[in-house]
Amino acid sequence: MACPKIALTMLILGSVMILGTDARAQADAPGPARLAQVPTPQTPPATPPLPPAESQPAAPTSPQPADPVGSVATLQGSASVTRNNATSALALRDPVYKNDVLQTKVDGTLGITFDDETTFTLKPNTQLAVDEFVYQEGGANNAAVFNVVRGTAAFVAAEVAHTGNMRIDTPSSTLGIRGTTGLVEVPEGGAAGGQVSIKLYPDADGRVGRIEVFGRDGAQLGILSRGATGFAIRPGTGGRFTAAPLQISALEAERDRSFVRQAFAARTVGRQINQQRRTLQQQQRNQIRPNQPNQQRPGQLPGREQRPELRTVPGGQPLPSPGTRPTLQQQPGVPPTQQSQPGARPTLQPQPGAMPPGGRPNPPTLQRQPGALPGPQRAPAGQRKPAKKNEGR
Image (cartoon, rainbow, N blue to C red; front, side, top):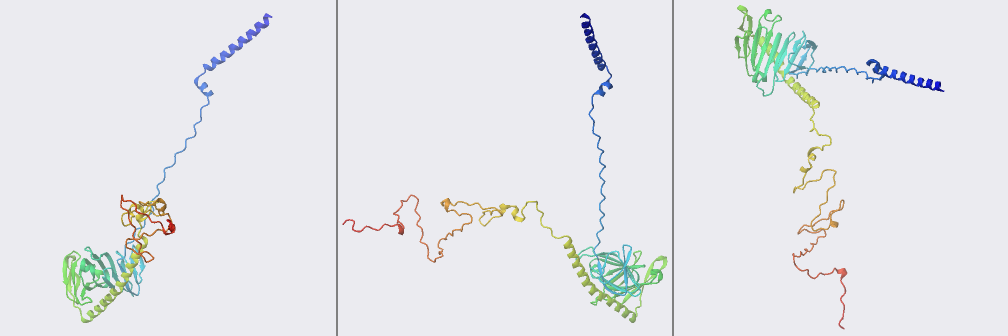
């Protein structure tokens, strides 16, 4: 019996020793081995950063076209305009802009009327550049610069020449126009092709203005102040130009006047065309920029209804806001049951001295003075008791 007990005891002791050895082994294990037994939380993959928002390029804004400064008033044959380095054919009533270069063909005669009614008429093979044109009715800074590059051009000066500064350039001279009618002839080769002729003629009403002639260097060459007179601008010594008086024959003067009359006629037609164009432009502006009403916040009433306290009747009593039911005010001395009910027909209160609808005046109601004793009251006719007869008999 002792041997089995000893064997069992030894077995138990061996098991205890083995378990203790395993526990110490685990306690003495290095750090990585212990960490490997603890599940580590998995970190979610980092979200890739969003790419920076690409700045959208601003939509290209087309330049606002400038307003026209004139119109094609008359056209015979063919003519063209060079605008923004592009050449196109001209038609009657076409607008003319600043920096336009106008050109007539071999069969073309062109009349242009500007906003101040200054008018040019171009003969065939004539080129005119609109270098500058600023006009405002009643303005103090009106200015116009035209350049006759080649050919023959008649002109009728108008408001810019009267109120501002109008100038005509030629290849050899600069003309200061002081409110008049004239004619400029530039040969095909400009100053190198021969002399430039400048002539002065009376206006349509017979008045004669003045043309001041300057060289391209700014030196004054002469002044024209009599009708049917002119200068021939010729090359001089040292590269300068001189102005020699022109001898205008009667035939040449009549031919020039006939051409000038075409400018007068073109001005009359061009005035109407320009007026119609300006009216149409104003209508288009009104359609693009209509009159906007006052901006309101959401839920805000329009007009004076935004402030109900301002809506009053004579006497200072405020009106109720739209959509609200008026509050009944109790009148002093009137029982609540006799107050006007909503929807009830109002009772007309007669004014003192006013006639009732029946035509007979109501008897005045006797007012009892404060503190007075009530007098004998008379019962209504329907409630009176008949008097007893012969009570004492």
